[in-house]
Image (cartoon, rainbow, N blue to C red; front, side, top):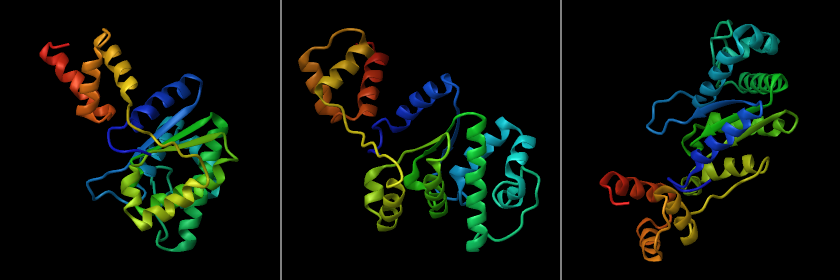
Length: 226
């Protein structure tokens, strides 16, 4: 959790690279903030990626009688769309099918599911996340999520469900750079030790936001001023 530009997605990129180097399989889903995305959009992306990588026959064998339930969300496994996702019983069967699919995929190889920008997620995606989070401790799986904390706090509805989800896992609050961290970042980017005056000015200008620090350094590099 953290403000825009704080490095949430960058941190997950680095984590996923290391996890994949150690043999895990990672599948990403990103929320669409502009509007118009279907329900379950981040999950649809992650599951499509899993389906493409593992192959339809293997996924079908994992799903068993859950194929028809997942077909409500993804037609790829080969079953026709049936049922109404507004029906509570149908939604529960879908959630259970996805949870069992992830558990089977995690047995095949350690699994990482990344859901980015969850402050823009629809309610159905968050309810599914809560369902999966309650079962994840029984899997060789890790679900990683990012969100902008101020947008969640501003919404009572989001605060309530994020609170429930958070009790099933761990929360990492990402903060801004302090002056020594700005100095380290500048030194690595410029390959020269910066003056204390430059670092102070940079910290004051950017307020320690990593995205802004990086943007200023790129601008100086493009102008040849490093």
